[in-house]
Image (tube, rainbow, N blue to C red; front, side, top):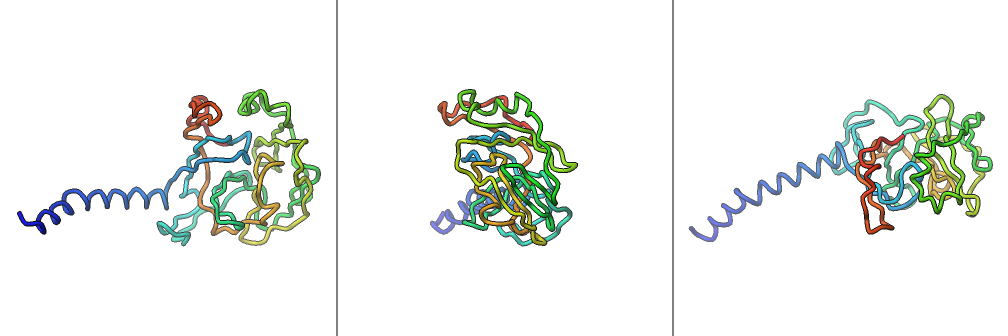
Length: 231
C-alpha cells in the first residue's frame, strides 16, 4: 500500500467519520440545545456560581447553525423567562430574566420594580430557595418572591450593604427589545446599564440546572441541584 493509499484509508475510516460527528454535535449545540456555565452570582438565588444550565435554543425560533440568522420563529420571550443572550456591552453570553417586553415602561424605585406603573408584589421566599445561599452569607441579603402582574413569582434578593443602582427610569422598552435583569438585583450587570436587548441577540431559554459544583469546596457536587427546573 502506497503512502497515498494509507492517507486515503485513514481519511475514509477515521478522519471523515470523526469530522462528521464533530460537525453534527457542534451544529446541534449551535441551533438546537446547549449548556451554559454560570461563573457569576448575578442570578442568585435562582442560579448560583457553579451551576451549569440547559439552554433550549428552539424555545423561540430556529437559527442557521453557527449564526444568529433566523430560519423560522414561532414564539417570543415571555415576562419571567430566563434567557441566554449576547450582551450589547461586550458580546459576552449572559443569563438574565426578562422583566420588560416591547412597549413596557420599566421603573425601579428603591429596588422595587414597577412595570407600566404597576408595582410588583413581594412575598416571603421559601426557605429551601434561600438555602441555595450559604448560611454564613444569608444575613447579608434580603430575599423575596417577586411577582410581576399575572406572571408566576420568582426569587430575587438584594444586598443593602452594596453600593448599587436601586433607582432606574422610567424607561420604555423599544419595539423588538427586551429588558433584562438579574435576580441578584444589587449585583447584576443588566439592562439598567446597557439598555434593552434586541430580539436577535437572544440565544434561547434557560430551563434547567443540569449540574452544579461548589467551587468553594473543591468542586463538590451539589446533588440537590442536579436536574432542577428553573423558575
